Each structure stands twice: as C-alpha cells, then as structure tokens.
Image (cartoon, rainbow, N blue to C red; front, side, top):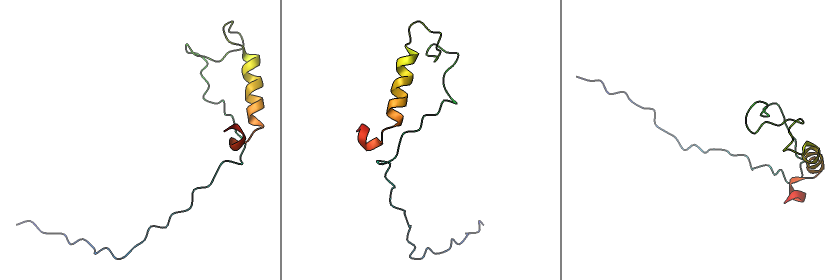
Amino acid sequence: MAKHIKKPAVQNSKVITQPALSTEGHLQVWVFDNVDRDGHFRFSPTRADMDCQDILEKIIHYSMRTWADIR
C-alpha cells in the first residue's frame, strides 16, 4: 500500500514584484568580447568589403545617445 505524502497547505501569500526600471535615460554600452573574429561575418579592419571606420564612427555616435533619443 502506497503512503500518501501530505503537502503543506498554501497560505495567502503574495508575490512582491519590483516595478520595471526604465532604460530610456541610459546610454548604450557596447561590448566586444563576443565579436565574431573567425567566421563568415567576422569583424576585421582588414576586410575590403567592410567599412570599419564608418561602423566605429556610428558606434561612437550612438554611444553618446540615450535610448529615448535613439527611439
């Protein structure tokens, strides 16, 4: 005969949640530790088909803007 395990009764418990914090006034942060260095889409200044100067200028420009400004 199988024993039945009693489960503790759930009392009136409330889940307390924090309001979502807005990132609208925050600046972007660029992280390059996972950049593709070997694949077909690698990021390399030596690629003839990629204008790295233009890409870096845009990254720098966007890093000075907030998310609200970009939207």
